[in-house]
Image 1 (cartoon, rainbow, N blue to C red):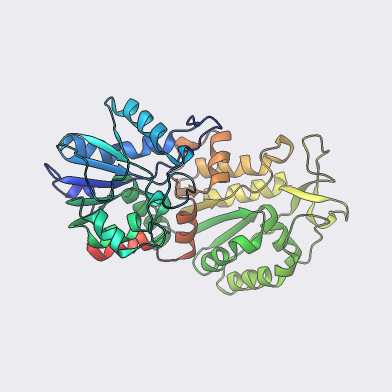
Image 2: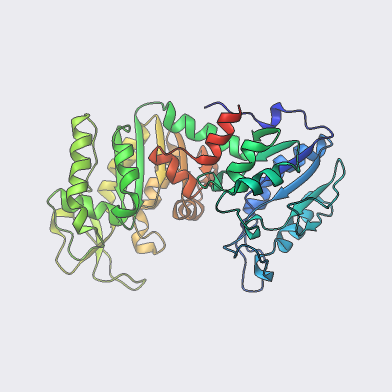
Length: 392
C-alpha cells in the first residue's frame, strides 16, 4: 500500500493540520484517566514543531451532538494535558472552521472537538473544503478513526494541498500490511469474543488466508457445538452452528484447521466465587458453562504458536478477568510473547489481557485501532486510508 508519510514532507514554515485520536477516557469530573492516546500523538506534533511548522491539531471526543459544544464535549482537559507533555502552552480554539485564529510557525493550537461541527460525521464536502483551506499539509495520524468516512478523516485528505500519514498511522499500516498482506507462514489468527455474530465476517475472511484459526470465548463454544460436542448452558450462538461448521469445512478444504479444545474449565455460574472444574470437552454437563480452555488445550496451542511465522491476536480465550478462568489466556499471551513469529494484537479486551499478563514489550505491534483494526482484519477498505493512498 502506497501513501505519503509525514517524514517525507518538508513542513518548514507550512500550516500543518494534524487529525489525531485524542478520544481519551475521563472520570465523572472530566479528569483524564488514561493519556495513552495523547502520548501516542506526540511524535507527529513534535516533528512538525521542530521543523518550524504552524501546527493545528484536532480530534473527536465522545459522542457529541453536532452544532453544540457541551462542557463534557470540550477538549479543554486534553489541551491542558497536551501542554504538560509538550512543555508549552496549547491554546484551545473554538469556532475554528472558517479560520479567524492565528498560529505562528513553531506554535501549536488545539482545535475544539471536530465532531461538534455540523456535517463532520456525514463527511460534508463543503465542510471538508473549508477545513482543508486552513492548511498547506494535512496529516492523518488517527488510525482508530480510519474506518469512518468523516470530514476530518476522509474529506480533508481529498481537498488539502498535500495529504500524508502521520507516524502512528504509518506504523499501524506497516504492521497490518506485514501481518495480513504478505505474512510469513504459517499464519495463525486468534479470534475470540462473546458471539460469533459479531465476528462472523472476520472469521470468514481469515478462514480463506490463515493456516490456523484459533477461536476462544463464546465463539469457541459455538465451534465446539459445531464439532458435535456438548456445551451445556455455555454462552454460544446456537443459530450459527451451521456457519461455524462451514468455516471449519472451508479451513479443512485448504489443509488448515480450527483446533477444538480437548479440555475446558467449567463452572455452574459465572462469578468470582464459582467452583472451577477442568474436564475433557466431551464431558461438559447440561448445567455447566465453559469459561476457559483447559491446560492440555493451552499447551497444545502454545506449541503451535511456537512454530508460527505470523500471529494475529484479537480477543482473550476465556473469562481472564477472574483468576479461576484466566489460565488459557495467560498461556496464550505468554506463548505469543515467546514465539519467534511476527505478532500483532488489537482490541480492547486483548490490550487489557496484554497489560494483565505483562507481555506488552514482547508483542511486536499492539494496535490501538479498535474498530479500524477489526475492519482491516475483515479485508475491508478503510475510507481514510483509501483517501491517503489516492493522494500518493
